[in-house]
Length: 161
Image (cartoon, helix red, strand yellow):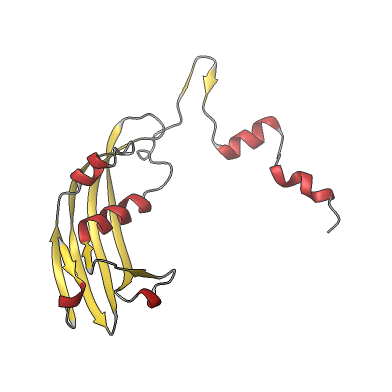
């Protein structure tokens, strides 16, 4: 679904329901197996040369566990507001410049979902892998087990600044 920047007048809300598996396959995601459902609402509001888009999206994804690589369902909720402009001089860290005058909602929703996923995804109650003569440690367990608290910045402690 494309939003033409120039055609948005005032405030409007759009019901969204879509299939983002195309983007997932195109980007060859190793984290997300499948988008099972993506729906919600998108509110557009134009204020002078700025288009404010509020995304209120709920999705259910099949993701791979980072601990066991087994797929499982992961619900996610997105509540974000993004700002767009068609004027180059208004571009900033918080305001995106739209060169073509159109915004691709599916791309933005896909990006918001992917960037909202935690780095470590696993089912509730799932344990780190272990077996005969090995086990995977969490980072905090690693420091406890070997007694070290090494930091690459330790070398800087002796500098006289």
